[in-house]
Amino acid sequence: MPPSGSPWFVDFFALATNFMCTVLLSFTRFLDMFQTYQQKKASTPKSLMSLRTISSSVEDQLVIWQWISDTVFLENSDPHVWWRTAGFALAVLLHRAGYTAESQYRHLIFFAYFVAPELGPAPDSAVAHSNWKSFMTDDHTPIELSWDWGFQGSLPAIRYSIEPIGKHAGSSIDPFNQYAGSQLIQQLSRSIPGVSLAWFEHFSKEFLIFDGPGTEDHESRFFAAFDLHPNQITVKAYFFPAFKALKTAQSKLAVVSEALVRLPEHYLYDFHGFDVLRNYMQDPSTNGLMTVEMLAIDCIAPMKSRLKIYTRARSTSFESVRTAMTLAGRLNSADLLKGLEELQILWNLLFRTNGSSTEELVGHVNHRTAGILYNFEIKPDGSLPVPKIYIPVRHYARNDLEVLQALQIYLQSVRKDNHLMEQYLQAVSTLL
Image (cartoon, rainbow, N blue to C red):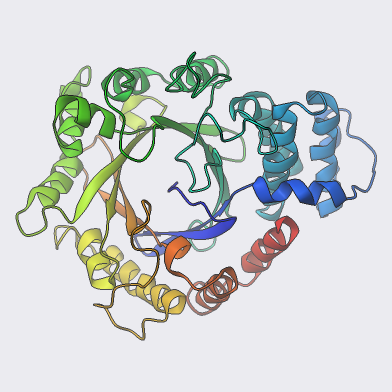
Protein backbone atom coordinates (compact mmCIF):
# COMPACT_ATOMS: atom_id res chain seq x y z
CA MET A 1 0.00 0.00 0.00
CA PRO A 2 2.45 2.63 -1.06
CA PRO A 3 1.48 6.28 -1.44
CA SER A 4 0.33 6.52 -5.04
CA GLY A 5 -1.18 9.83 -5.99
CA SER A 6 -2.10 9.27 -9.60
CA PRO A 7 -5.77 8.73 -10.52
CA TRP A 8 -4.86 5.08 -10.68
CA PHE A 9 -1.78 3.05 -11.17
CA VAL A 10 -0.74 -0.54 -11.29
CA ASP A 11 1.39 -1.70 -8.41
CA PHE A 12 3.09 -5.05 -8.64
CA PHE A 13 4.33 -7.42 -5.96
CA ALA A 14 6.83 -10.18 -6.64
CA LEU A 15 6.43 -13.19 -4.37
CA ALA A 16 8.09 -16.57 -4.92
CA THR A 17 7.26 -17.77 -8.43
CA ASN A 18 4.24 -15.56 -8.88
CA PHE A 19 3.33 -11.91 -9.01
CA MET A 20 0.45 -10.19 -7.28
CA CYS A 21 -0.65 -7.18 -9.30
CA THR A 22 -2.53 -4.37 -7.65
CA VAL A 23 -4.61 -1.56 -9.05
CA LEU A 24 -4.76 1.45 -6.78
CA LEU A 25 -7.48 3.95 -7.34
CA SER A 26 -7.81 7.54 -6.20
CA PHE A 27 -11.39 8.74 -6.12
CA THR A 28 -11.45 12.48 -6.49
CA ARG A 29 -11.82 12.07 -10.25
CA PHE A 30 -14.97 9.98 -9.84
CA LEU A 31 -17.09 12.84 -8.50
CA ASP A 32 -17.88 14.34 -11.89
CA MET A 33 -18.71 10.90 -13.22
CA PHE A 34 -21.61 10.55 -10.83
CA GLN A 35 -23.27 13.71 -12.05
CA THR A 36 -23.86 12.04 -15.41
CA TYR A 37 -24.06 8.39 -14.37
CA GLN A 38 -27.48 6.90 -15.06
CA GLN A 39 -28.39 3.97 -12.85
CA LYS A 40 -30.74 1.43 -14.42
CA LYS A 41 -33.42 0.58 -11.90
CA ALA A 42 -34.03 -3.04 -11.08
CA SER A 43 -35.83 -4.94 -8.37
CA THR A 44 -34.36 -4.10 -4.99
CA PRO A 45 -33.09 -7.03 -2.91
CA LYS A 46 -34.89 -7.03 0.42
CA SER A 47 -32.89 -9.69 2.19
CA LEU A 48 -29.57 -11.45 2.04
CA MET A 49 -31.27 -14.58 0.77
CA SER A 50 -32.60 -12.72 -2.28
CA LEU A 51 -29.06 -11.68 -3.20
CA ARG A 52 -28.16 -15.26 -4.02
CA THR A 53 -30.40 -15.16 -7.06
CA ILE A 54 -28.90 -12.00 -8.52
CA SER A 55 -27.22 -12.48 -11.86
CA SER A 56 -23.61 -11.54 -12.53
CA SER A 57 -24.16 -8.56 -14.85
CA VAL A 58 -22.73 -5.18 -13.88
CA GLU A 59 -26.20 -3.68 -13.79
CA ASP A 60 -27.42 -6.28 -11.32
CA GLN A 61 -24.37 -5.96 -9.12
CA LEU A 62 -24.99 -2.22 -8.92
CA VAL A 63 -28.39 -3.04 -7.47
CA ILE A 64 -26.58 -4.13 -4.30
CA TRP A 65 -24.61 -0.92 -4.22
CA GLN A 66 -27.70 1.19 -5.06
CA TRP A 67 -29.82 -0.49 -2.42
CA ILE A 68 -27.22 0.25 0.26
CA SER A 69 -26.98 3.81 -1.10
CA ASP A 70 -30.71 4.27 -0.57
CA THR A 71 -30.76 2.91 2.97
CA VAL A 72 -27.53 3.98 4.72
CA PHE A 73 -26.56 7.60 4.15
CA LEU A 74 -28.17 10.99 4.36
CA GLU A 75 -27.90 12.99 1.16
CA ASN A 76 -24.85 15.28 0.94
CA SER A 77 -23.09 13.89 4.04
CA ASP A 78 -19.37 13.17 3.78
CA PRO A 79 -19.81 9.39 4.20
CA HIS A 80 -22.42 9.48 1.47
CA VAL A 81 -19.96 11.04 -0.97
CA TRP A 82 -17.27 8.53 -0.05
CA TRP A 83 -19.79 5.77 -0.60
CA ARG A 84 -20.83 7.15 -3.99
CA THR A 85 -17.18 7.28 -5.10
CA ALA A 86 -14.97 4.79 -3.27
CA GLY A 87 -17.89 2.49 -2.48
CA PHE A 88 -18.90 2.40 -6.13
CA ALA A 89 -15.36 1.50 -7.19
CA LEU A 90 -15.25 -1.23 -4.55
CA ALA A 91 -18.52 -2.67 -5.88
CA VAL A 92 -17.16 -2.79 -9.43
CA LEU A 93 -13.91 -4.48 -8.37
CA LEU A 94 -15.67 -7.06 -6.22
CA HIS A 95 -17.94 -7.97 -9.10
CA ARG A 96 -15.19 -8.22 -11.71
CA ALA A 97 -12.95 -10.22 -9.37
CA GLY A 98 -15.63 -12.91 -9.16
CA TYR A 99 -16.97 -12.46 -5.63
CA THR A 100 -20.40 -13.96 -5.09
CA ALA A 101 -23.34 -11.59 -4.66
CA GLU A 102 -23.63 -12.57 -1.00
CA SER A 103 -19.93 -11.86 -0.42
CA GLN A 104 -20.17 -8.53 -2.24
CA TYR A 105 -23.10 -7.53 -0.05
CA ARG A 106 -21.18 -8.43 3.10
CA HIS A 107 -18.11 -6.40 2.12
CA LEU A 108 -20.09 -3.41 0.86
CA ILE A 109 -22.16 -3.22 4.03
CA PHE A 110 -18.96 -3.34 6.06
CA PHE A 111 -17.50 -0.49 4.00
CA ALA A 112 -20.67 1.55 4.33
CA TYR A 113 -21.02 1.25 8.09
CA PHE A 114 -17.43 1.04 9.31
CA VAL A 115 -15.15 2.61 6.71
CA ALA A 116 -16.87 5.44 4.83
CA PRO A 117 -17.57 7.40 8.07
CA GLU A 118 -13.83 7.25 8.92
CA LEU A 119 -12.49 8.89 5.75
CA GLY A 120 -12.91 12.49 6.86
CA PRO A 121 -14.18 15.36 4.71
CA ALA A 122 -15.21 14.21 1.24
CA PRO A 123 -13.26 15.32 -1.85
CA ASP A 124 -15.86 17.95 -2.78
CA SER A 125 -15.92 19.39 0.74
CA ALA A 126 -14.55 22.88 1.27
CA VAL A 127 -12.27 21.54 4.02
CA ALA A 128 -11.39 18.26 2.32
CA HIS A 129 -7.64 18.78 2.16
CA SER A 130 -7.20 22.07 3.96
CA ASN A 131 -6.67 20.65 7.47
CA TRP A 132 -5.30 17.12 7.06
CA LYS A 133 -3.11 15.93 4.20
CA SER A 134 -3.02 12.16 4.25
CA PHE A 135 0.19 10.39 3.26
CA MET A 136 -1.86 7.50 1.92
CA THR A 137 -1.58 8.88 -1.63
CA ASP A 138 0.39 11.66 -3.27
CA ASP A 139 -2.81 13.67 -3.81
CA HIS A 140 -3.81 13.09 -0.13
CA THR A 141 -6.78 10.84 -0.87
CA PRO A 142 -7.09 8.73 2.32
CA ILE A 143 -7.99 5.45 0.60
CA GLU A 144 -6.49 3.00 -1.90
CA LEU A 145 -8.24 0.04 -3.48
CA SER A 146 -6.21 -2.85 -4.82
CA TRP A 147 -6.74 -5.84 -7.10
CA ASP A 148 -4.47 -8.71 -6.02
CA TRP A 149 -3.98 -11.19 -8.88
CA GLY A 150 -2.91 -13.92 -6.50
CA PHE A 151 -1.22 -17.09 -7.63
CA GLN A 152 -1.74 -18.75 -10.98
CA GLY A 153 -5.08 -20.52 -11.11
CA SER A 154 -6.64 -18.58 -8.22
CA LEU A 155 -9.22 -15.81 -8.33
CA PRO A 156 -8.15 -12.23 -7.59
CA ALA A 157 -8.63 -10.77 -4.13
CA ILE A 158 -9.72 -7.21 -3.42
CA ARG A 159 -8.10 -5.23 -0.63
CA TYR A 160 -8.01 -1.63 0.44
CA SER A 161 -6.12 0.63 2.80
CA ILE A 162 -7.28 3.79 4.54
CA GLU A 163 -6.11 6.50 6.86
CA PRO A 164 -8.87 7.02 9.45
CA ILE A 165 -9.39 10.77 9.75
CA GLY A 166 -11.15 12.39 12.67
CA LYS A 167 -13.68 15.16 12.28
CA HIS A 168 -11.27 17.75 13.68
CA ALA A 169 -7.99 16.29 12.38
CA GLY A 170 -5.45 18.98 11.60
CA SER A 171 -7.23 21.61 13.68
CA SER A 172 -6.31 22.96 17.09
CA ILE A 173 -8.72 20.44 18.62
CA ASP A 174 -6.97 17.40 17.12
CA PRO A 175 -3.79 18.67 15.42
CA PHE A 176 -2.23 15.22 14.83
CA ASN A 177 -5.32 13.10 14.07
CA GLN A 178 -4.74 11.34 17.36
CA TYR A 179 -7.95 9.42 17.97
CA ALA A 180 -9.58 8.10 14.79
CA GLY A 181 -7.28 5.15 14.14
CA SER A 182 -7.38 3.62 17.59
CA GLN A 183 -11.11 4.17 17.90
CA LEU A 184 -11.72 2.35 14.61
CA ILE A 185 -9.59 -0.68 15.53
CA GLN A 186 -11.23 -0.87 18.95
CA GLN A 187 -14.64 -0.79 17.30
CA LEU A 188 -13.68 -3.51 14.81
CA SER A 189 -12.37 -5.73 17.62
CA ARG A 190 -15.90 -5.77 19.02
CA SER A 191 -17.51 -6.40 15.64
CA ILE A 192 -15.31 -8.84 13.68
CA PRO A 193 -14.65 -12.35 15.00
CA GLY A 194 -10.97 -13.18 15.35
CA VAL A 195 -9.63 -9.63 15.62
CA SER A 196 -6.92 -9.47 18.28
CA LEU A 197 -5.61 -6.27 19.86
CA ALA A 198 -2.50 -7.83 21.42
CA TRP A 199 0.09 -6.63 18.91
CA PHE A 200 -1.94 -3.55 17.98
CA GLU A 201 -1.89 -2.24 21.53
CA HIS A 202 1.84 -2.90 21.88
CA PHE A 203 2.89 -1.22 18.64
CA SER A 204 0.49 1.67 19.27
CA LYS A 205 2.33 2.40 22.52
CA GLU A 206 5.65 2.13 20.71
CA PHE A 207 4.93 4.21 17.60
CA LEU A 208 1.87 6.44 17.98
CA ILE A 209 3.86 9.45 19.17
CA PHE A 210 1.98 12.74 19.34
CA ASP A 211 4.17 14.90 21.57
CA GLY A 212 7.41 14.89 19.61
CA PRO A 213 8.62 16.53 16.41
CA GLY A 214 6.87 15.67 13.16
CA THR A 215 8.60 14.36 10.09
CA GLU A 216 9.74 16.65 7.33
CA ASP A 217 7.16 15.51 4.80
CA HIS A 218 3.95 14.24 6.44
CA GLU A 219 2.05 13.89 9.72
CA SER A 220 0.27 10.57 9.06
CA ARG A 221 0.98 8.12 11.86
CA PHE A 222 -1.41 5.23 11.30
CA PHE A 223 -3.13 3.38 8.45
CA ALA A 224 -5.63 0.51 8.52
CA ALA A 225 -6.13 -2.05 5.76
CA PHE A 226 -8.60 -4.79 4.93
CA ASP A 227 -8.12 -8.03 3.01
CA LEU A 228 -11.51 -9.14 1.68
CA HIS A 229 -11.88 -12.92 1.76
CA PRO A 230 -15.06 -14.61 0.53
CA ASN A 231 -16.47 -15.05 4.05
CA GLN A 232 -14.33 -12.87 6.29
CA ILE A 233 -12.13 -9.78 6.56
CA THR A 234 -8.55 -9.57 7.79
CA VAL A 235 -7.79 -6.28 9.53
CA LYS A 236 -4.24 -4.90 9.31
CA ALA A 237 -2.58 -2.00 11.12
CA TYR A 238 0.30 0.17 9.82
CA PHE A 239 2.66 2.31 11.88
CA PHE A 240 5.36 4.87 11.02
CA PRO A 241 8.52 4.45 13.12
CA ALA A 242 9.90 7.84 11.99
CA PHE A 243 8.16 9.75 14.79
CA LYS A 244 9.67 7.54 17.51
CA ALA A 245 13.06 7.70 15.79
CA LEU A 246 13.01 11.51 15.72
CA LYS A 247 11.94 11.77 19.35
CA THR A 248 14.65 9.37 20.57
CA ALA A 249 17.36 10.38 18.09
CA GLN A 250 17.69 6.84 16.80
CA SER A 251 17.38 5.22 13.40
CA LYS A 252 14.04 3.83 12.30
CA LEU A 253 15.57 0.36 12.14
CA ALA A 254 16.74 0.72 15.74
CA VAL A 255 13.34 1.67 17.15
CA VAL A 256 11.70 -1.23 15.29
CA SER A 257 14.29 -3.61 16.76
CA GLU A 258 13.60 -2.30 20.27
CA ALA A 259 9.83 -2.61 19.79
CA LEU A 260 10.18 -6.29 18.90
CA VAL A 261 12.30 -6.98 21.96
CA ARG A 262 9.72 -5.30 24.18
CA LEU A 263 6.80 -7.37 22.87
CA PRO A 264 4.93 -9.04 25.75
CA GLU A 265 6.12 -12.65 26.01
CA HIS A 266 8.65 -11.91 23.29
CA TYR A 267 10.44 -15.16 24.12
CA LEU A 268 7.56 -17.01 22.43
CA TYR A 269 8.43 -15.50 19.05
CA ASP A 270 11.33 -16.25 16.76
CA PHE A 271 11.94 -13.25 14.48
CA HIS A 272 14.90 -14.78 12.67
CA GLY A 273 13.53 -13.24 9.46
CA PHE A 274 13.92 -9.77 10.95
CA ASP A 275 17.47 -10.57 12.04
CA VAL A 276 18.33 -11.49 8.44
CA LEU A 277 16.82 -8.23 7.15
CA ARG A 278 18.58 -6.15 9.81
CA ASN A 279 21.89 -7.85 9.04
CA TYR A 280 21.51 -6.82 5.39
CA MET A 281 20.56 -3.23 6.22
CA GLN A 282 23.49 -2.84 8.63
CA ASP A 283 26.05 -4.52 6.39
CA PRO A 284 28.75 -1.94 5.49
CA SER A 285 28.46 -2.90 1.82
CA THR A 286 24.71 -2.20 1.70
CA ASN A 287 24.18 0.17 4.63
CA GLY A 288 22.11 3.17 3.56
CA LEU A 289 20.73 1.60 0.38
CA MET A 290 17.26 1.33 1.92
CA THR A 291 15.50 2.84 4.91
CA VAL A 292 12.51 1.71 6.95
CA GLU A 293 9.23 3.36 5.97
CA MET A 294 6.45 1.47 7.78
CA LEU A 295 5.73 -1.50 10.01
CA ALA A 296 2.51 -3.48 9.59
CA ILE A 297 0.79 -6.32 11.45
CA ASP A 298 -2.26 -8.51 11.06
CA CYS A 299 -4.73 -7.88 13.87
CA ILE A 300 -5.14 -11.56 14.65
CA ALA A 301 -3.70 -13.98 17.22
CA PRO A 302 0.02 -13.08 17.47
CA MET A 303 1.38 -16.52 16.56
CA LYS A 304 -0.64 -16.40 13.33
CA SER A 305 0.16 -12.78 12.53
CA ARG A 306 2.73 -11.46 10.13
CA LEU A 307 5.11 -8.61 10.71
CA LYS A 308 5.72 -6.60 7.55
CA ILE A 309 8.62 -4.18 7.27
CA TYR A 310 8.29 -1.66 4.44
CA THR A 311 11.52 -0.13 3.17
CA ARG A 312 12.31 2.40 0.46
CA ALA A 313 15.37 2.50 -1.77
CA ARG A 314 16.27 5.28 -4.17
CA SER A 315 18.14 3.13 -6.69
CA THR A 316 15.86 1.93 -9.50
CA SER A 317 18.07 -0.37 -11.58
CA PHE A 318 16.97 -3.97 -11.86
CA GLU A 319 20.32 -5.03 -10.47
CA SER A 320 19.50 -3.09 -7.31
CA VAL A 321 16.11 -4.84 -7.23
CA ARG A 322 17.81 -8.24 -7.41
CA THR A 323 20.19 -7.26 -4.60
CA ALA A 324 17.37 -5.98 -2.38
CA MET A 325 15.01 -8.90 -2.91
CA THR A 326 17.70 -11.49 -2.26
CA LEU A 327 19.15 -9.38 0.56
CA ALA A 328 22.48 -9.59 -1.24
CA GLY A 329 22.34 -13.38 -1.51
CA ARG A 330 20.93 -14.11 1.93
CA LEU A 331 17.70 -15.27 0.25
CA ASN A 332 18.32 -17.64 -2.64
CA SER A 333 15.49 -20.16 -2.92
CA ALA A 334 14.74 -21.57 -6.35
CA ASP A 335 11.23 -20.09 -6.22
CA LEU A 336 12.56 -16.60 -5.51
CA LEU A 337 15.16 -16.78 -8.29
CA LYS A 338 12.52 -17.96 -10.75
CA GLY A 339 10.25 -15.15 -9.60
CA LEU A 340 13.01 -12.62 -10.26
CA GLU A 341 13.39 -13.94 -13.81
CA GLU A 342 9.67 -13.38 -14.41
CA LEU A 343 9.81 -10.01 -12.71
CA GLN A 344 12.55 -8.88 -15.09
CA ILE A 345 10.32 -9.76 -18.05
CA LEU A 346 7.60 -7.52 -16.68
CA TRP A 347 10.14 -4.83 -15.74
CA ASN A 348 11.46 -4.66 -19.31
CA LEU A 349 7.92 -4.49 -20.71
CA LEU A 350 6.96 -1.64 -18.40
CA PHE A 351 10.07 0.50 -18.64
CA ARG A 352 11.61 -0.46 -22.00
CA THR A 353 15.03 -1.02 -20.49
CA ASN A 354 16.14 -3.26 -23.38
CA GLY A 355 17.23 -5.92 -20.94
CA SER A 356 19.72 -3.70 -19.12
CA SER A 357 20.10 -4.60 -15.44
CA THR A 358 22.15 -1.55 -14.50
CA GLU A 359 20.05 1.20 -16.10
CA GLU A 360 18.39 3.56 -13.63
CA LEU A 361 14.80 4.48 -14.45
CA VAL A 362 14.10 8.01 -15.66
CA GLY A 363 11.28 9.83 -13.93
CA HIS A 364 10.36 11.95 -10.91
CA VAL A 365 13.50 11.03 -9.02
CA ASN A 366 13.22 13.81 -6.42
CA HIS A 367 9.65 13.06 -5.37
CA ARG A 368 9.09 11.92 -1.77
CA THR A 369 7.65 8.60 -2.94
CA ALA A 370 10.12 8.05 -5.79
CA GLY A 371 12.42 5.07 -5.78
CA ILE A 372 11.21 1.56 -4.97
CA LEU A 373 9.16 0.38 -2.02
CA TYR A 374 9.88 -3.11 -0.70
CA ASN A 375 7.94 -5.17 1.80
CA PHE A 376 9.52 -7.98 3.84
CA GLU A 377 6.98 -10.33 5.36
CA ILE A 378 8.24 -11.87 8.60
CA LYS A 379 6.51 -14.57 10.64
CA PRO A 380 7.28 -15.27 14.32
CA ASP A 381 8.21 -18.87 13.56
CA GLY A 382 11.87 -18.52 12.65
CA SER A 383 11.33 -18.61 8.89
CA LEU A 384 13.18 -16.42 6.41
CA PRO A 385 11.60 -13.14 5.26
CA VAL A 386 9.46 -13.14 2.12
CA PRO A 387 10.27 -10.15 -0.12
CA LYS A 388 7.79 -8.21 -2.20
CA ILE A 389 8.28 -5.22 -4.46
CA TYR A 390 6.07 -2.35 -5.52
CA ILE A 391 6.98 -1.63 -9.13
CA PRO A 392 7.06 2.18 -9.36
CA VAL A 393 4.94 2.82 -12.44
CA ARG A 394 3.56 5.93 -10.72
CA HIS A 395 6.82 7.81 -11.29
CA TYR A 396 8.58 5.95 -14.08
CA ALA A 397 6.12 4.47 -16.60
CA ARG A 398 5.26 6.55 -19.65
CA ASN A 399 1.48 6.50 -19.26
CA ASP A 400 -1.45 4.40 -18.07
CA LEU A 401 -2.08 2.85 -21.48
CA GLU A 402 1.45 1.49 -21.76
CA VAL A 403 1.18 0.03 -18.26
CA LEU A 404 -1.99 -1.80 -19.27
CA GLN A 405 -0.43 -3.06 -22.47
CA ALA A 406 2.66 -4.32 -20.66
CA LEU A 407 0.55 -6.09 -18.07
CA GLN A 408 -1.59 -7.70 -20.75
CA ILE A 409 1.46 -9.01 -22.64
CA TYR A 410 2.95 -10.34 -19.41
CA LEU A 411 -0.20 -12.14 -18.32
CA GLN A 412 -0.72 -13.68 -21.73
CA SER A 413 2.89 -14.84 -22.17
CA VAL A 414 3.83 -15.81 -18.62
CA ARG A 415 0.61 -16.39 -16.67
CA LYS A 416 -1.33 -17.69 -19.71
CA ASP A 417 -4.45 -15.96 -18.40
CA ASN A 418 -6.70 -13.90 -20.66
CA HIS A 419 -9.97 -14.10 -18.74
CA LEU A 420 -8.85 -12.27 -15.61
CA MET A 421 -7.16 -9.61 -17.70
CA GLU A 422 -10.45 -9.05 -19.51
CA GLN A 423 -12.26 -8.69 -16.17
CA TYR A 424 -9.63 -6.27 -14.96
CA LEU A 425 -9.90 -4.17 -18.12
CA GLN A 426 -13.68 -4.11 -17.74
CA ALA A 427 -13.29 -2.82 -14.19
CA VAL A 428 -10.86 -0.11 -15.28
CA SER A 429 -13.06 0.98 -18.19
CA THR A 430 -16.08 1.23 -15.86
CA LEU A 431 -14.25 3.39 -13.36
CA LEU A 432 -12.27 5.74 -15.61
